[in-house]
Length: 230
Image 1 (cartoon, one colour):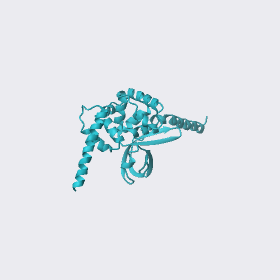
Image 2: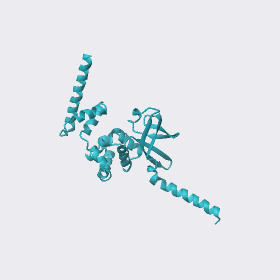
Image 3: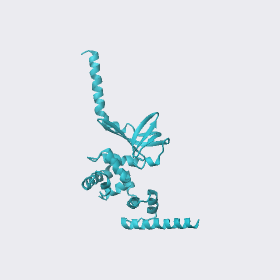
Image 4: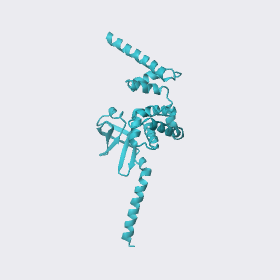
């Protein structure tokens, strides 16, 4: 075999090996991106990094917090398919860790994982999983009760083993009260402020929501009276 032919076959072999190895480590090739926001969509951002625009799928809460021209750093996950490379961006490591945890569940792809994280933050999802509560997951489009229960079962076995930090944060008091208040129309900041004033021994969700609503109602009355006196 001539040197030219030998070199050709070695080149083909190296490219084939690279293609086979790529999915195994590509998810960690781009760990984060820092650049200028070039475009803002409903569920994506385009980040200009050194003149190169990176399209990142993000959670729905992100676009409302940034503007075109701002500097931004996002943690990333590179999802590799045979015909596509997709970047997903996250504001916190907790979100990315839980996203990657969701990807370990059979049948859960990156789009579904993002939809799950859009329903509730990781700490609320962890509380639901550890309590065997699949209700939150049924709010995700395309996930029925049976699938939600299977996902909860799959996740629960992995949480304590692989994500002890996330589990620890998931134990935040009154996280379920905060989520319930957000569903009722309050901002997350208002919900957290009300939940922070609740006694830690108040563990019942219904009573916790009722007490928080009383606190929010009292605050609203005070603000109304203050505006009347001005």
